[in-house]
Length: 287
Image 1 (tube, one colour):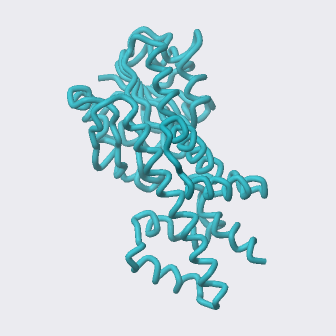
Image 2 (image 1 turned 90 degrees about the vertical axis):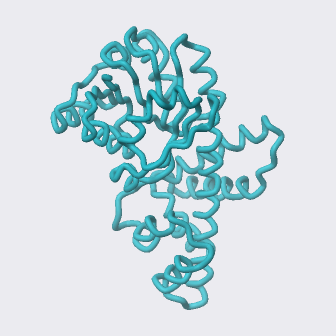
Image 3 (image 1 turned 135 degrees about the vertical axis):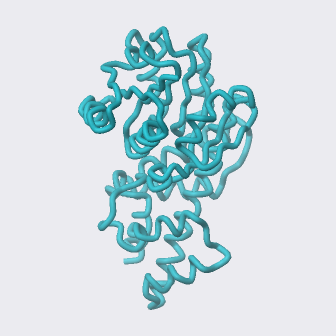
């Protein structure tokens, strides 16, 4: 099976590397061509100049794109993925809205499968992602070798769009925890407790979560580490989740508060900073 990979961002480049390492024949495309050129040279992979050329060269395309607008631009149009003739399966692994995925499926007679991931850049590097597959068991069986190369576990959710919904649900929890952690740390520090000690207690408590452990370096020294997930992307996640919830008649009061704080942080220049920077933002609110 020849595999195409579109989107070599922070997560995508690591996922594509793991596909190559697992022995898959990989062709890549990226909006910034120099990234694709560098990847192809470093990994003895092929490079496509357009999304259409990518889909013409492979059997299945994996995308890791930032949002619905990026996805629409890459899939549609005369040079889009769907204009290619060879690829018949398109696996969408970015955080996309269920309505957008439905629109993609309606725009083509090819198979569109949502399979977003949970896990940050370290998990992507180590092929330890959780993959939420919005498809049935038969479709999953065809794609399992690809998922095994990128993740530690794949959960089959049985129907199209279910992966996208669960990704939004999981990210709601993550962003809520991120906000609450920032508030808890700010409170402890205001009472004179050292940040390292406060984090030690939180990490060892009943409130601990894997995210806290792997993001600890960023919470304690954001400036000293690379960005893994931006404040802007966190706000986007909660905005998309809110749109879905309104359509389903579901109230998300806590997530609305978290989104409002993210919006305020963006207005204060935090958009491109790691979401751990919300701790710095909350410290500033105390002053």
